[in-house]
Image (cartoon, rainbow, N blue to C red; front, side, top):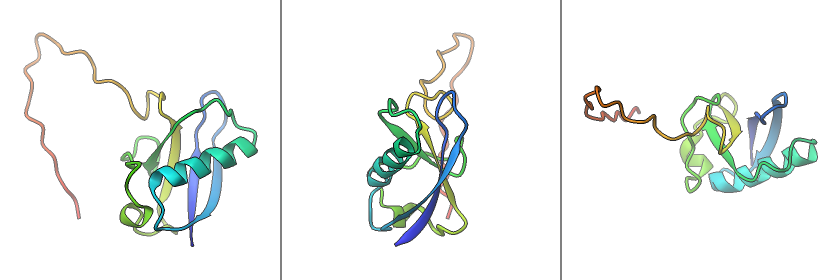
Length: 113
């Protein structure tokens, strides 16, 4: 078991930090379900039906639900996770509408190792 520090940032409430022992061979979606269960027990809004997990803060990279914790969290002692509602505009949102005067630039993807 590893210990994961997760900050839950519900809308309209103060964030809370949870320390969750969890198997590193589990999926991100399994951890998200556990975060939701524990946040609900802590009195946070149970109406948050779906959480999105980020590496670091709420603006950090999204963690894919199908990935395994051991593949995305290198060091659970120093890395943290933030859980936000899926509909939180700071975590996920639609792309801004295209600007008719703006010329699209090519998308560049960098993979850091």
